[in-house]
Length: 399
Image (cartoon, rainbow, N blue to C red; front, side, top):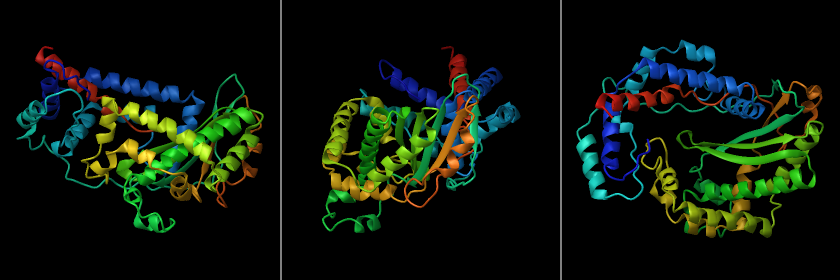
């Protein structure tokens, strides 16, 4: 929940949270509205080839874990109002709540409100006993699966997907693989590894844009991404592109070669500087934004994440201290040998898809390219239903 702090905004925010935990008001109309929105989202997904490729890659990567896919209409219809209410009420445990305050407010006032509203709170109804978040079983699938979306245009979308350890998972064993000079405090920082990968991501993006799109003109767009799942302690690596329909195989081979060259350390000092300089400038700009600080502070106090306050101090200085050798030693080292899967989506007007994938080259070594089945990302009906709680509470209060 986001709330302004002007006037009585801070107090109202604590009042709303308190009401949410203690006296939530439920309305069937809000439930039906939230379910309809999720059904529309699922319907839209069926007609967007880019999103279907991305969602397919994610679900196959996590072995079909039911916590990740967007719910189908059949699944949404099976959820009833009473089940949703009971599920949320069992999860409303103040001990799991993380309150982040950023902005122009009086710390003493915030502390007073927090003690007043939450100091004596113990629980809400029947709360599920504490339990660890189940691990995600990352898998590899060698089956060839094609996604098809009706479209008058002749086009395709390709997604490369892999996984790495979490952003805070750098160990002493990693440091032992570095040259003898890697003994400074910088390299012992929990966030050192993730920062190396962030810089490497920018280098890869720049190289892909230059070589695949601008020079070889094989694709309309191409992008490299790195997503962190902190509570599960692993990261998802993605490359997505929309190649020209008659040059799909050539585009896959070109991306494969470019990525392999970078992973093997073929990075120039100029490329490193072109990636780091804008990143430092962006960091300076972001540090002035409340929303950025909220994201930095998120999960710092969570028992399900190893992140702590040391990971968010002196961020600009940390990026400024990185070197090309750091990025090669850790960033390239993490990507080297990483399994890469491939999802290939097509429009129904594209007829020669079956001739493309079987002979595609491997990405980062001897591991073959793989393709993935169809999915979507994350059931959120319960979260969407949260809006009805706040609206109902305000209605009951006469606001």
